[in-house]
Amino acid sequence: MSEIQQSLPEALFRGTLEAIVTRFGLVEQAGEDGGPWMTLASQLPMVQGSVGNVRLFTGAPLFRLVTCSLTVAPMQLDSHMLFAFTPGNSPLPHFTLDSVKAGEHFAFHLDLIPRLDLGANLAYMDSVFQPLTEVFEAARDIEGLSRAHLSPRQLAVMSPWMLAHRADASAFQAIEGTVQAYREHWCGLVEAGIPAEVCAGVSGEALQARNLANKAMLFSPEIDPVWQRIEGLIGAEAVAAQRALLLGDDE
Image (cartoon, rainbow, N blue to C red; front, side, top):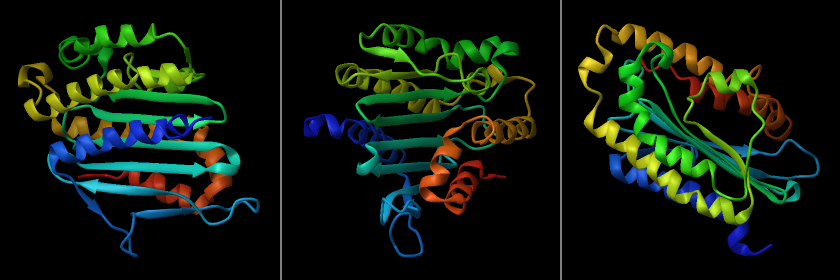
């Protein structure tokens, strides 16, 4: 396996992270030791020492941006997650990207997380998500992609424009333009805001309540089995701390 293939997930992740941090002037919050917010240490006897980190960035107009990277060579795992949260009382969607290589297979997950019920808010759906349709449909036709196995409950807490696929190396490289298009659309929404008439009648309190309820499901170990899988690697305490950061109440 060539070096460029081994580093593809990190390159996609870092390019996305740097673009968002630079565009919005976000500031990284250091941990107690002056390094990343949290260092992730292996709890497995066959893997020693640090296996990754959690980083935290803050700054208006976002609430926070959280990343988690896990690189475990003996397990052939190279995983990088980014979640950019908008304020709790805002209708602006959250942005998320997972960029992964496990064994010989690549995978990614890309989405804008809706803040209103799309089944009852057509104007919001058309304003926030409809512009992504052409990019979304083109991405699904990329040769070398196959749909990831997600449960109906996992699908229900995301958006219908979510892309979650396994990929070969060529297909994984080909989705970079898709990630950029989603990121640029989301950044544009954050900068321009969502027209008031699109969210008429929806209060900040209602948005806040839905946001907290949605995040509780997004990061639930009962819904997303990834938490159970990584608990054996980094331990229950580290998983709980990471989930608390993602769930954070921004009132």
